[in-house]
Length: 110
Image 1 (spheres, rainbow, N blue to C red):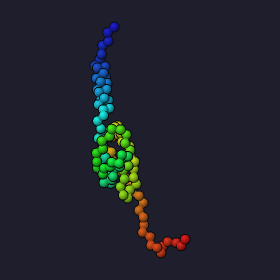
Image 2 (tube, rainbow, N blue to C red):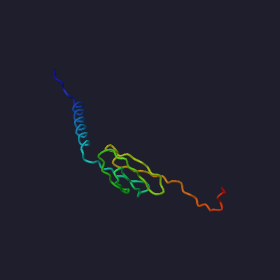
Image 3 (cartoon, one colour):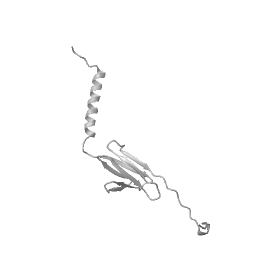
Image 4 (cartoon, one colour):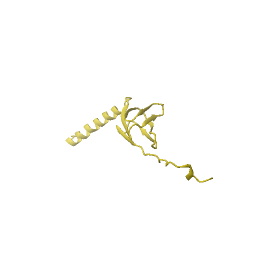
């Protein structure tokens, strides 16, 4: 029994072949580069191996990385990067509460 492939079948097979080749290309040992930015800019991105960069910066990722993004006056944020992460990541940092100057006379006796 012979089978005929219709145009749709050929397109599906071609699509599967491209997907298979793409999967091979992304599973290589080459790092994937991710551009990191922050709001506000100038935050320090620290990695577990002791390396760091200041946003905006590019990070080469081969395995899952934990990154701590921090800047003075803002709450730090931990992000995880891997080969499937977006190629551009923006981390928004939020200000921590500001202290109000207090005069000694305003403090109650304890």
